[in-house]
Image (cartoon, rainbow, N blue to C red):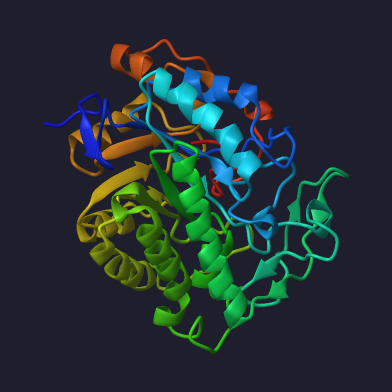
Length: 355
């Protein structure tokens, strides 16, 4: 029987355990040009005992930003600032991937340089609000991406992945979940296109697959993870035929030889098991535990083979040395939802940062 505290080979490195720190939006890139600060390095270094850290969402381009003070990986200054973070994690023996997150239509013009609008597969505004420096604002009608702009966005992901490696990250995770750009292409209600980027299942999955191919070509598939959240309604997303659509997505991704698939689970465990069976590589699960954060009872999911590794969000915020506490059976500091930034971790709860 495999346990969560055994090593796992991933991305040409050996993870010390199978406890993964989930990506959690922080909005604390107070440095110049949306760059992480010294406090960011301290934050991640404190949690370096995770088998794998997946960073907060990092925008691959200027227009990919959807929240205040979130960091990027599209400038030399950002690369330099992230290098201090990755060095701090590596000095503590940790492994860290950068999550590349393009928020698509989830954003606001006030967060972008003059003249830019959030973008999406189709010009359909999200029926939700986003945080801005002036407080919550309604999402605006996004600009529909042209085919040329879609190709440029794919190239932006690849460039950001190269920048991540230059910054010392061990790999990247492509964010295809939580109602952001890749899931917008997968959706029924945001992707109204009838060209090669929409209409059919193959059209809807194409953008995510092409991003994965471009990033794998840029830095090596063994350094690339992909995150999904089938059926997650967060950020005003509607999806149908989850088994068929995500089955086709995994069929297209599997030949690439990616490092892992990271599943943010909904209430349908049977769907999780079907996708787990289909995926031939490493499988990381952020299990559905609504309304509570993922707790120590979830460790059994590694032991029974439901997943290869287990990701935790909120419990890692409250317990930086979480793997040690899980091994010892506690004690655990209780996460305080009032302190969480409701950015992107879980759309099934009132506090999306819950893991």
